[in-house]
Length: 130
Image (cartoon, rainbow, N blue to C red; front, side, top):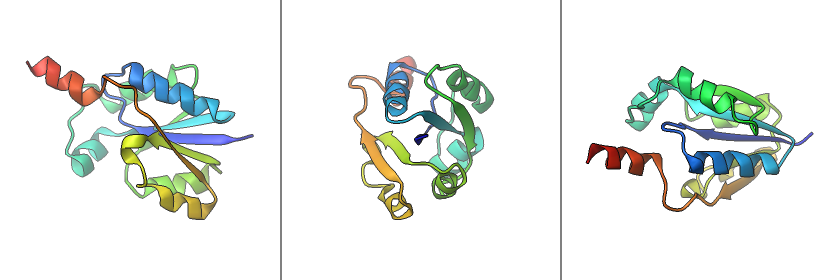
């Protein structure tokens, strides 16, 4: 069985999120999605989420492409999760290109998928403020 893992905040869930989950699942048999916690988003990324982490995790869990959802609580977790879950493929959006190549040293294939053009949570939040 080929295991795939991806990470994200998934705030204001939109078609871009769905697209990356679908494409990630197509790369393997089992998709694990790590959803960034509110604490991690605030303390490490300086972001305030519109939807609380437990709700975001439930939303992601309901997506048919997703087999398992775990919380993301720190940056170092990516390395340990790949070991813990025996991950074969690590997937992120191409806006992170090169940032997680160090996982290749663990024998994990790292793939950066193109983002869906014209949509992002940041843009949605900016539009809502107008």
